[in-house]
Image 1 (tube, helix red, strand yellow):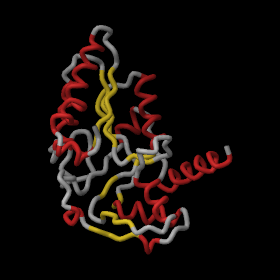
Image 2 (cartoon, rainbow, N blue to C red; image 1 turned 180 degrees about the vertical axis):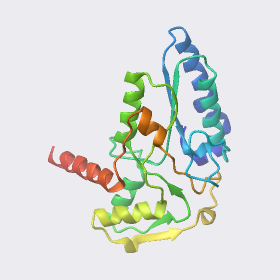
Image 3 (cartoon, one colour; image 1 turned 90 degrees about the vertical axis):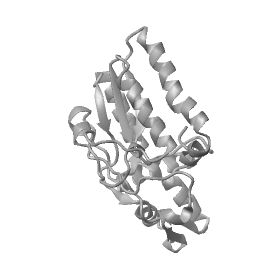
Image 4 (cartoon, rainbow, N blue to C red; image 1 turned 135 degrees about the vertical axis):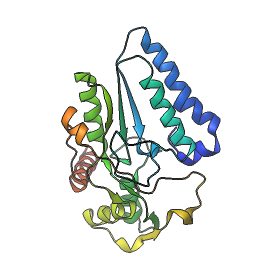
Length: 229
């Protein structure tokens, strides 16, 4: 359950999906001593000292973040061989019309000449879905164990992400309206600056993420292929 505000408003469901479900999966895997790979989040940090390494202390701010931290601990204490991949702000092309992301949302909105409010005081490392997938594949096939931070290298504001999408696709940035996190008055608190130090993943998972512009090029090529199909 990844909708942060929905988790804050419905902590019981959040717990079922993000904590209890991990318990069930871990218990099922114990019979076969399965290598368990868990995807987690930068939100386990409070955003006061990013970018973060795997050794940094977690300090979750929201119900969602607490649930992901608890899920991590279940995996770590399971006795199974395990890998935890923390990631953040994933972008890419998707078949699910209900699931968008910052890149697709910005591109579509600006193409339709809609004004969009974009947060200017949160900083993340945007992560191409294919890069995260590659890290998962390596962890699975090589059975690499441990905790890894897997994200794009650049730590930039959400506002800059939107502006660079506009520049890449030659769209009008006048429709982008900067706003602060506080002005949204969202139910759940967000960490303001996260970002990851990814050197461990580079060494042990051979993880070499593309730049943000390279990621946008991947998206542009995929969207073009869909139009031609």
